[in-house]
Length: 316
Length: 111
Ligand SMILES: [Cu+2]
Image 1 (cartoon, chains in turn red, blue):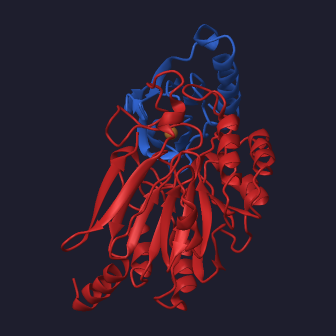
Image 2 (spheres, each protein chain N blue to C red):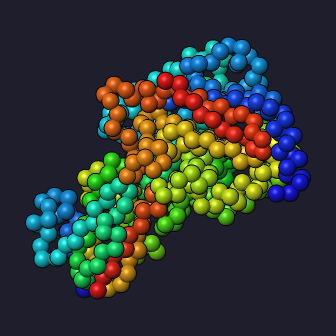
Image 3 (cartoon, rainbow over the protein chains, first blue to last red):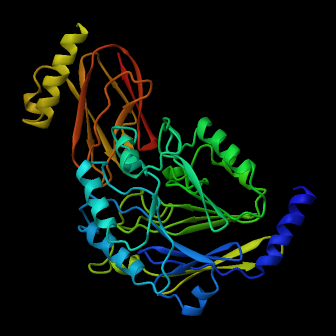
């Protein structure tokens, strides 16, 4: 590790001192931007004063899987509605929503129709979407991009600035190769490099995409082939938050100034890495307890000796 | 067998697989691949030329059979217990994967 990098990291650690990031309901995650550092709060447990000193907030929802109709959740429309109702009930309105993919289960037009209809219930002015692999079946995402795309690039990826924060929506579910994982591809990486090149290192950056942008659990395909290249462009920034979906549970990792988060699904949980024979809907849960699986969990980052230590605490 | 006849035959067998089941599949020998726990079983299937290969999805997640290099027709998204069948007429090694779970890979060897 170079000295320069260490100095930079120490400076950021100093600014953060004690970063408490917290967690989230299955309903959605409320993201608060405070002093350029993103913090997560459960929609349920938000104290008024916590929201007051945030510069702005947004909400991430993920993996609504409209069209899924089996155990443990035969009514994924109802749970998405419940998530939106919770978001709408926030006293401080989020500026916008992010949906990090798998809007639908099988990319069917009627599933997209249902999703669009339900999302009308969100009071937030706008929702930004990126596709999941379930949204691009059969047509390489043509229908998804026609309905939900930002039309900034032919590949569907995009960026925007909001109150001093740079947001980047990436697509890592297309042109997947046999034996591989999620993929960004050379064209998207070249675009990303250029998109970030002119930004100052002080600009907080939020990157969102469906599949985890780190090798979270390769045995189950939970990763992205060329994410390391993307991260090499992001490393110079003081505050980078990477938001993903796909695995239907909270996982978190800190790597220098880059913090990776995966969100819960609004539809159903999946097993923790290696805790089942395979990924897929976690069915082995007691009847009526789905909501507890979509419950609240606290994740606290404390400053360690050489690196940020992450401790997790489940709030029963 | 000409490509046209092979296509007709694959179509007929595909219809049979959806409808009346294996008994209606005629003379073509059939071989099965089960998709379970996000894996193809057997991962390597060896058959004689002219064999109809039938994939059945036993997972709660959809899967899609896609030929690496586009050497045979891809399936649609297969939901739970849905099947996909295609006939392999020409000897060769056919690698395939699931396009939405690309770490799932399999091979059909046709002799
Ligand atoms: Cu699959």
